[in-house]
Structure formats: C-alpha cells, structure tokens
Image (cartoon, rainbow, N blue to C red):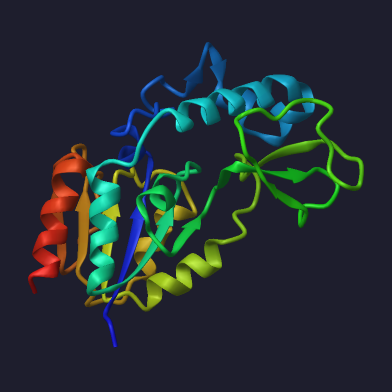
Length: 229
C-alpha cells in the first residue's frame, strides 16, 4: 500500500505562475477592498462588480501555465498516494495532472445557482454576467467560498490530514482559517515540510522542516528527496 502525502497549497504556488495574490496588493483589487468583491455583502451591494472581478481573474488564469512546483507534485504520484488540499480557486493543479485535488475555497471555473447551491455548472470561457441564470431562473454566482461563508469541505480536508504519512505545506501564510488549522490534524509523528520564502511562524512540532524557498525551487528538490527514499 502506498504511503499517503497530503499537500496544502496556498496563493504562493499560483503566484509563481503569474497569478496576483491579494497580499501583493494589500488586499485591494483596482482600489476596491477585498470585502467588496469577495463577500456576501459585496454581492448584495454590487453583483456586477463582483462578477467583473471574477471575470478578470478567470481571464488571468487562462493566460498562465502550471509551474515546476505544480508539475513536481504530479511526479510524487509515481510512488505515493497524493492528496492535494488547495486554498486556491484556479485549476493549475488539475492542468498539471494531479488526480486528487480538493478545493477548500471553491473553483474559479464553476458557477452556481443563487437559489439552490447544489446546482453547479462548469464554465467554458471566462465570462459570467448579470442575466446568466440557472435552470430555476435565478442569477448565477461564482462557485467560490466568500469571506464570512462556511467552508463545506473543511471536514473532508481534516480527515485526509489525519491519515497523512507526510504533510507538505506550500506557499501559504497560514493566516486564513479554517485552512490554517489543518496542521493540527496531522498525526503527531508525521513529518511536516513547510515551503515558503517567507515561512510563517509555526508552533514548534517535532519533525518540522522549513524550506525558505520559492515553491518552484523548494518543491522539485523535496519531491526528488521523497522519491529517492
């Protein structure tokens, strides 16, 4: 039976493919506070602005490619059962070829009904506009978990982490909860590797290795090391 590697990824891994992060712009998008474009209140107040924000993010995501870190994680599947838990909404892990990807904060290339949240639709292009309706006649919204909304997949993510033989944490500030709390679900003796040039402070754990490198440098190195074990 293959050993299991759980990988938690954040904005840092996508940033190296050229996708801007909120942190880079001090939480602003074209002068708008993140709460205006990524919260239920923002949606109620100005759905057109919110739709435009996600249209621009989709357009950006279509213009970039998976990087060396995304691809290296696919190589791990040769020897390990790899489960990726991502805070990112882009599809770069899937495009690189990863088979098991759990999106904690939703998917950029999906829309869902505002009337019935079980109605989810894949998106072909990058545009979602006012007047685009679900089959029940209600406006479609991005299938994204906004600030202030529950994170429905967090329990599944915690269960995956509980059975990890290795935990890799890549490109995340570990500031966004509940995702940041996943580390505490890893078994006590599970080796944890933290890869980030600005590695966040983590409560002391046995078996914690910090690699203060960019994902595209640190991940391929670590993958090579794990595959040679």
